[in-house]
Image (tube, rainbow over all chains, first blue to last red; front, side, top):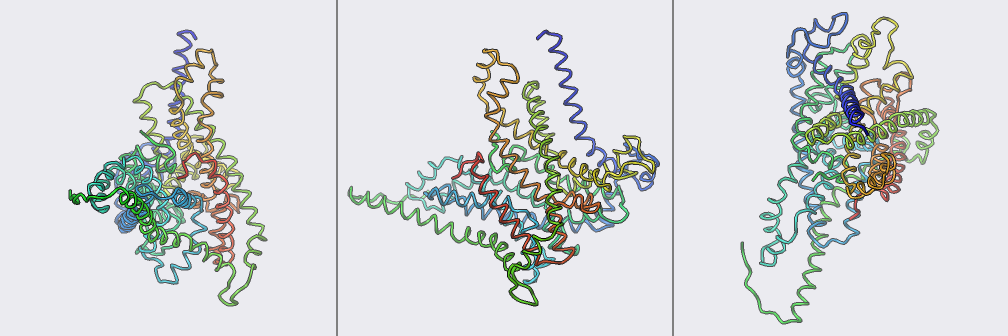
Length: 281
Length: 306
């Protein structure tokens, strides 16, 4: 290849990548631009790409006037509770299969069962849950969502945690056990501190998934008392006359939390999404 | 750290203690695992059993046998929704997989700077982590008539503008485009990670032997990528069956039933028509099919099985 044609290829590649980036980024740009427009800007004959008079009114309107602040609180309560439960349960399940001589069959059964849940469509699962939750009086209550989210994000937590625990050498704990430490003591003073990063990664990813969940919350809640933020955003999109700037502001808020969490835990996002098949080193 | 006093033990005793310790540890596995795993296993399996019970009973008539299954499987709208789901998958999945593969190949071959690679890595993660509902919001702003940016850019704002979300063919293309926008980066990230696992010695050896770019891809790199591409395909198929959020807010399944994909169809039977009997029968069928699908594909997944 000549020097000149190599240069040409390089420029062509750069242009192509820039074009792809533009196509992917542009819709998000328009979302943010819309979320900063005033009501009057929305009625311009040709919608503008840059808000002529940027304002944060749509955000205050969504959070306060429309009362979505309460939905935000619901989302956070549900997310934190079920993330906490999921990580505790995941630890109780991953400890024996990574730290104790569990038979390969038990290990494979647990992991396979967890992964198989990933293949069940939520709509099929929610139909029987809907009937039970209504029957036991938990309909339109946060505990119902916490329960369902915990169960259906558990596979993710188990697979991620399993991957991390497998990488922490067992020898230090064994040395402590030989020295006469109790299992609980070894867990508390050796394994738990060593898996701090792992716990943080699992917590962030699971919380982000809880935050984004829509269908369960949509079907199992009815009023702002228990609705989560995505359910509220859905209302902004499907109402008869869409208020574009409010809808866009709702979208931006919904995106902001998982996006910032994922940026913090960026090395573990793909691990979470592929159940540990892709590992970032 | 507390240390137990050393105890003098005879040789035979030591073997015995080791053996006891081992079986004690194995017992501990079950003691720890059973209560917790048992509980979540039951809680996650209960819906299936309940769905079966709901499907074969009726509030007013008690046990009704397979009537609901008959109604569910005899409903022509079911097959219509399966067909639409298949068309959606046939549009979205090849574009996502070939597009993701193509971009990964491009970046892997021509971007050497680690900073740019890291920037692309983070940029590619953005669409994936956006909640599906927010993706629906984003694409309302793209496809809507009058305010939507697509028609503005196309210079089509008059009464004859294309109605991306409310004309049959366009609605299918619009919803599939959203899927492509969100998941091509996912394929890219998986495949790009796969490229990094190809040993550089093999690539260099092939280049010394004068392999063209294509043969290098076909015979050296593709074998490393194949298990990952299969993984992506299986996950994406499972996801297509789940597709709900963005379609619900973009088209609501319309116009007519043109974007009423499987999950939307089941939702409609269960919650719009309040026919929970038929919906339960559908849920049972879908769960059985998906578990069967999982059982088959899990053998091909590259993850270690225990």
